[in-house]
Image 1 (cartoon, rainbow, N blue to C red):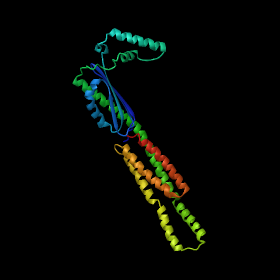
Image 2 (image 1 turned 60 degrees about the vertical axis):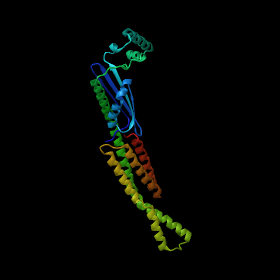
Image 3 (image 1 turned 180 degrees about the vertical axis):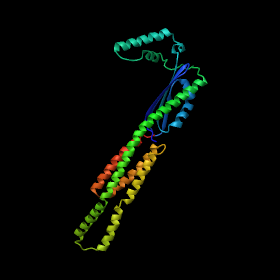
Length: 289
């Protein structure tokens, strides 16, 4: 199962006294970089919130935003209601003059710094549990969003691995042609230099040794093994972006060795295609949790 590192989750629970709202956004990061924003009193719960999120998420820059708003906000304010109404009218007039859309109440509350609950909020254990459940629900929505993106990335990765496998099969077509071409080229140069006067048995032994050094069967076998291993990890219960990246590096090493040994224009073109596809794979890996 593949999870993207980028995603978004939003959850809201309305209680008897308060509305608990949680937003979570995630971006790419090498590790888990977690930040929590909310009313000042949330700090006393931050450790528990972190533990809850760390159980579910392993990687990514995670931004958590929590707001707790009284159901009867007017009753919870220490500023007279008529002052709030006056602020709402001011912002409504500004919106009308600008012919713009917006929420004048929200703007008024922000201007009065009343968007969040007071520092002296008296919240019960039951309400804390409601908040934690809202966070948990938001995390699950985030994971669902990340999985949807991950499914699309998995399909792209699978397609790219299959392309490299197909190109690997194409190399086999040119193997015999390549070796014969190398043998012919060396023989012609030897004939030109020695005018045909050389120990042909010794030359044949040296030729075999040289051609063995150009043999790419081991590289092809290892490359296929790495490609299969990549697919196994991709289909694991929880695929690891780090692990997929390590396997991609091994795939790259074998492709590079194929290129350096090929000595054949068509095989080198295939290697270039492989490298291009591998770069696409690496870019996708960077976004896998």
